[in-house]
Amino acid sequence: MPQSSGLVVQGLTKTYANGVQALQGVDLAVPSGLYGLLGPNGAGKSTLMRTLATLQTPDRGKIRLDGVDVLADPDYLRLRLGYLPQQLGAYPGVNARDLLERFAWLKGRVNRRERRAEVELLLEKVNLTAAAARPVATYSGGMLRRFGIAMALIGSPRLLIVDEPTAGLDPSERNRFHRVLADVASEAVVLLSTHIVEDVENLCRRLAILADGRIVAEGTPGALADKLAGRLWSRIIPRGEAVPEAVHLSAAPDGTLAVVEADAPPGEGYAPHRPRLEDAYHAVLAAAGVTEVAG
Ligand SMILES: Nc1ncnc2c1ncn2[C@@H]1O[C@H](COP(=O)(O)OP(=O)(O)OP(=O)(O)O)[C@@H](O)[C@H]1O
Image 1 (tube, protein in one colour):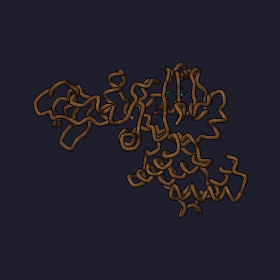
Image 2 (cartoon, protein in one colour; image 1 turned 90 degrees about the vertical axis):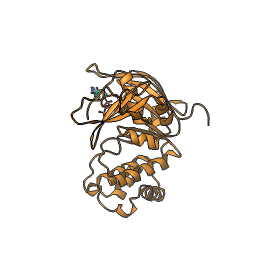
Image 3 (cartoon, protein in one colour; image 1 turned 30 degrees about the horizontal axis):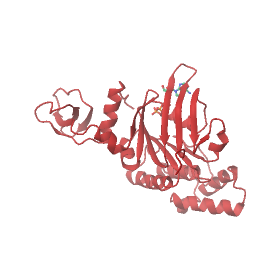
Image 4 (spheres, protein in one colour; image 1 turned 60 degrees about the vertical axis):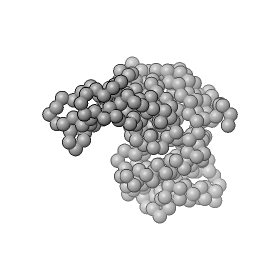
């Protein structure tokens, strides 16, 4: 594959009219496959995704898809883009098959037979063939998400942008959704923005962590976690005992699990803790001086 393939972002900045600097010089190189974008609330993820989807323009910077400057030629990207936003619109009364057909027509699929064949393939891909005649308004959250993927996949996009996809899905729907994404990622650049670190750890070959409009870490989940190898210690702090300064604290049945970064065990009862991507995520944010706002 040529060096320039995939999505390349250089020096992207965006300041909103109210003075918020949502992107402060973002550089990213996203190859084909599933790529994760993590970051706390307000980090600038949606701003970045909307900018990449050409829904808003940056103040400065470059965006290239497969070597083509898409800020100079937005239609090049639009023709190759699938975008799954956080919220899908409401389409009262219309069934999934008809809705997909209408969108396929809008995307230029004028040949009726080809359009229908593509829609049937998409319905199958997202496992909605059996429910295709039902109004989309009656779908469960998981079905709606899968329907959104089918919409985003009309025209076989080269770049699929997925913003915060699994909120509110039950575990089996989440799995099903992930399988569809992984399938699409075998032939496209898929950028997945989420708060769920575990999803990125399980699904993505590489990821970037965005904080305060800047990329503060980039790499494979394994490499980012390995930076903390031999430096993490954990202990359950019983209820009522003071909790220490920690990489992160999480609730456990008998108290609070504290994961602490240090050269040696920081006290009695601490055991070595095998670093996960979640630990790396919190450590990177702490090092960047960012504390996660409770969502
Ligand atoms: N249209 C806008 N006008 C002004 N400020 C905005 C606008 N959109 C976003 N912001 C601000 O820009 C910053 C980045 O917001 P953005 O929605 O991109 O972050 P995010 O990482 O997607 O957050 P979340 O995870 O909460 O969705 C925030 O401070 C937000 O308040």
